[in-house]
Amino acid sequence: MHAVQAVVSAALPVFGLILVGYFCTRRQWLGPAAMDSLNRFVVYLALPAVLFQSMAQTTWSQLVNPGFLGAFGGGMAATFLLSFVLDRAVRGRLTDASIEGMGAAYPNAGFMGLPLCLVAFGPDSVPAVVVAMLLTATVLFAISIAIIETDQQTSPNVKQTVGKVTRALVRNPLVVSPFAGMALAAAHVSLPQPVLHFTQLLGGAASPCALIAIGMFLAQSAGAAKAPRIAKSVGRLVGLKLIFQPAITAWLAFRVFDLPALWSHSALLLAALPIGTGPFMLAQLYEREAAVASRAILLSTIGSVVTVSLLIAWFSTH
Image (cartoon, rainbow, N blue to C red; front, top):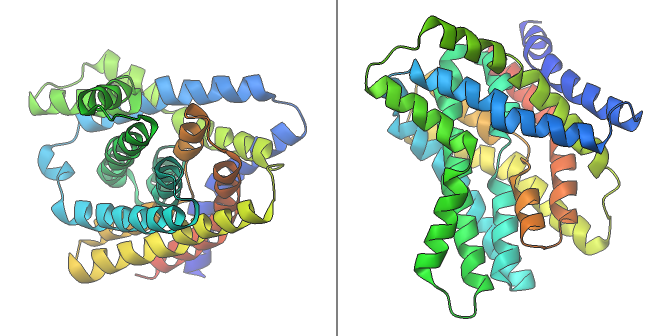
């Protein structure tokens, strides 16, 4: 009974908001323009406010956890490499292999991980979410772009590639905002009350808006192509994301690094999240086939209703 209550309390509100966004889009109450605006609001305003405030109130000792880096980062790296090698063997193009590798290893940490961890584990889990977001939004994104840029150029220019990757990261508010908060924390500067209230008000909209935006995106992706080759690629990505990555992360978190419960559970839950929108954005940016990414996001999110709920039930008994 306690496990059921944990699932209802933690998972139901999160997936319920995703369903609201999906339903509103399918009923055409909110159109494509609304989704774009809501997504931009979350990425450029609400989530950065949460990350800035959280990091400004977090000490380096709370944030730096080598075991968590090893467990979550190791699971992400192993998943990326396996997907990269498998797709490279099938299609042979570095660009496609990089996008698919990113798709298999890219959890929806910001839009879905933050609200889910807050409900399941409380505010103490925010540092783990931030580290996971930085690993995906900086390290994984940078590696993927670097591989693609190298593949796109007939004569690879290392300086040009590094510059392009750096500019992309510096312009990303989800990367800049936590580092700005960390800088204040390192300088022992407390946020003034008006600034604190401002970020609380703005950041309070992050979780519901992000989840509704996910639902809207899924509703628009529901009609993605279902060709046999695409179906095979999608199945591989969903399997790697929902089964392989959390399995490797769990082994690292519980057997290799023996993390405290909060960090090990956060690492496992974040690794088990469905695929985020990063691979889809990258496919569109480089004019590659985006149908695989969009359908993998859809199916992994649907599948995560079961896998994430089971994990939360397991957490409640441990």
